[in-house]
Picture 1 (cartoon, rainbow, N blue to C red):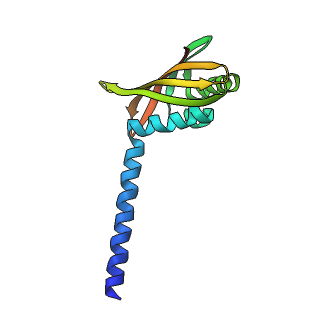
Picture 2: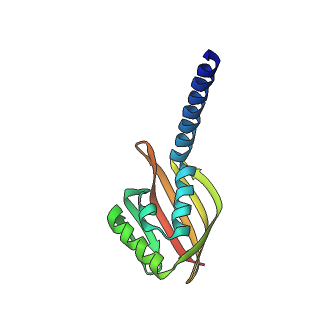
Picture 3: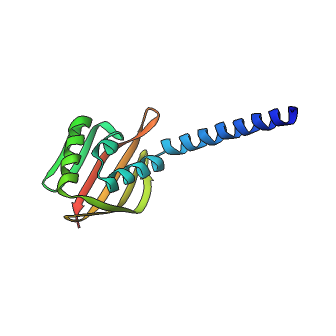
Length: 136
């Protein structure tokens, strides 16, 4: 019976450690970019906006501006409505100083877009400071 208790405690500790590791990975810049990639493919402006900084620069066809998080959500929702995404392939990721970035191509119902995502650490999170969708 003691052996079973020891194994149970060890398994519980391992599960906690793995959970912590996964949480730390998701909080890094790569985790944020991966979650944004999923939001783009799904055309989910709310999921994308959950990673916006309080102010975010957005470039889409016909508009290039700095928006509040709430305004940025509306801008992205409108973009996804006009250009329904079906894929987003990341071609390159890297960093320059404190800014992490990903470049890639978004496939939509209205054509393909060169896509650039820029994130910076704010508090404990990596948040989008700028995102660009430019027609290929």
